[in-house]
Image (cartoon, rainbow, N blue to C red; front, top):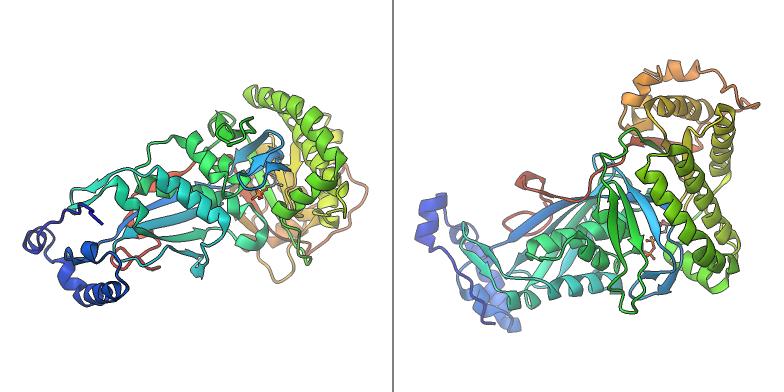
Length: 462
Ligand code: DP6
């Protein structure tokens, strides 16, 4: 490989940094050279003297759809049957951090998720890696005297470490944040010039909903018309500052059953549900326009009506699938009924609800006051089990507890039943925990090396 890798000499480096990487890694490097030469790979790169690792770390939010994506017209390229719209959640509470690294010493592409090594052999990972490698450009780190030419990228291997700041198994769209972060971080490492929308079309090939995590605020995934998927990408409708009043409370609902994955669920719906065809052709196109208007005008009443209707129709499509798919459970249904009753009693919606492919409720409150009243209601019906304290029962933005006058469990116990509902029955333990968050910003690059998940010398997880 004729890579032009320019280095500072060891003496120069010693003068600059006080040590030479060659000295500090001599043993490691020489054993890799020996190994590589045995296998006949990249010895020219390695023989140039030393091991280096170049890294980038990014943080990417998750998103929740208010107009749902459900159904593909192309399974490999991941092209949807309808447009969808989502709100990006504040990465301070729900995000993925990913460090990507390249080094001539790496023997293969490797990935670790939450500290555990996982296979990169799946088609979706391979598609994202191939597409991003195709767009890689020359990279030069003058400080460290490293230069990677465009053509070198095809031969260099990558290490990837990813970490979710929320439970991966909780059904909170971890694949959306994960693939978006992978593509964004690799684009930065490889000096890719494509903008966020173009990157979204690559992230889409990892997981459809991932394309919407390339932006903050409210985001639309335009389904596109082309067979090659080139026009199926995400655009930002408004940024996270546009509608700052909104509060989002997620009820992570306890569930024992293993759910059908979105991927297989939507495949079965496409094959068997006539309601899905009607939804994609007749309902979503109009609803998307109305939703865009509601967002632009910060019209909460229309927003809530559309978001609830769309969530309910998506779950109706699941019921219309053969065999039917049940994502919501009794707790989800109870939450819908409480919100509907409360909204009706107020005369105008205070809260919108939406449910993805699982029982968790995502509740969007019109403002801080409505969010405080909502958390009072939620904690009345779904108090923590006796061994759980309030601090670990409500995660994220805890300021809402103060607004609701809830400083501790005693205050939760003293809550009176919401007036709009006849029943005062409580369901302790039916919700695992709540997360309070807001609309949030899009992906960012983290410049603080301490936040990197890979060791800068070995390129292995810290
Ligand atoms: C219900 O993006 O997880 O959350 O494209 O097969 O990876 P794949 O599916 P995925 O589906 C998300 C479905 C949804 C609705 C939505 O996010 O729009």
